[in-house]
Image 1 (tube, rainbow, N blue to C red):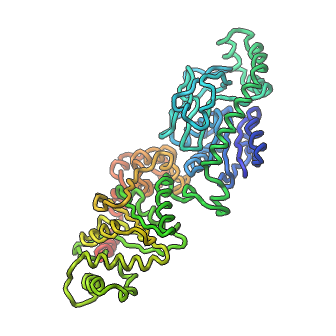
Image 2 (image 1 turned 90 degrees about the horizontal axis):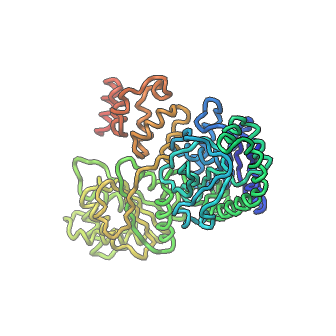
Image 3 (image 1 turned 180 degrees about the vertical axis):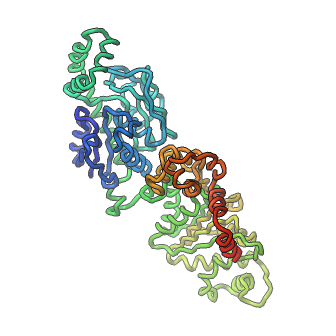
Length: 524
């Protein structure tokens, strides 16, 4: 295994944390970003450890590599790569996930107490940490807690001293790891902070502090090792690994290209595994337009190794032809219709218009379709139904009938709908929520790279409200100058505040001939 250690200051190396990794046989690649060393691809590593530095995370003009570092941190944490951040590393995590980092009311210098919050007492990494412990602090900045983060520790001056994001991303604002030489170097490098220290604690107090730190350092570093070992155990149990992401082992769902959908993909993965084991099940994914339902169906189809996949899609059709979706489902299976019992074969043939007879018992036709699906499931079968709310009523009834009666055929029925899932009373319901801020930022970076200025990115994230389609479409309605921030946005995001309005704005900007051509395509 490999760990990437990002360092920003000679006197704050990965230190004892690196020692713990090496003891476990984990290779450590150390990179000094402040010296201009290139930022490696985090995807090649199993763990990410980010240390402290003398700069502030918002000083991107002076330290342009901060932009790429924060992007890498956001991508890594969003996809489940275990993260451990120290001081600047905690501020970088907060900033990468969209939170404000700012100058605090006064610097925290020297050895000061921090206190565990209630959540820390139940946390697998912090629950054995002393409830109140003195730590070394050397920072002037603080930050707002990121969305969905859990506060684990606080101090008398700053509320956020340690926090958790997800299951494996941990950050501490304090230092447990510095050697005595490291601390001496810090005071020598920043004389103004040494003066602040002596102004606060008295003239000559620095020399006494260094003597006291020499005595307390072994215990502090022992605490650092214990905390880091617990983090490492938790990371190895619950984090993604580079080998899995690169296809060298069994991939986990967090390695997929979808952002913020690990939990939903885990549930879909279980549904597919059940079908492979010969047990059937149905799941309905519901949510607003553009929230990512189709993307989950596509991901499920990509993961359906060893399974036969059938796709059905509802479409807006003013004629509302009865059984149109039902016919689309049955069409690939009709080669086996001759093996059905006569009653079922006749009912299904009449319903699908394959025989001249009038439609009769529709439930017999639905049962005939279930027989066809069961026969096709000699090889496990995944049935993906997209936009079920646009299906005709008869087809929707047929799908609900089938969903309530599959059991031991090896069929996985996956339905996406923008409507009421109540029709499928026998299915597992998954309500798809908007993306959180971190996933939204990552999606914009993946789609547009550096094309959007940080201010525009923040505005788009606020307007899109976590809708993936809106995040992709809204920037396209802006002019090139508006995207890079050289031209004011004005009211552009007021009129293009959803995917639909953004697309309509682009259509409206086309010439008459182009709009007429689009109309012809849409009507046909």
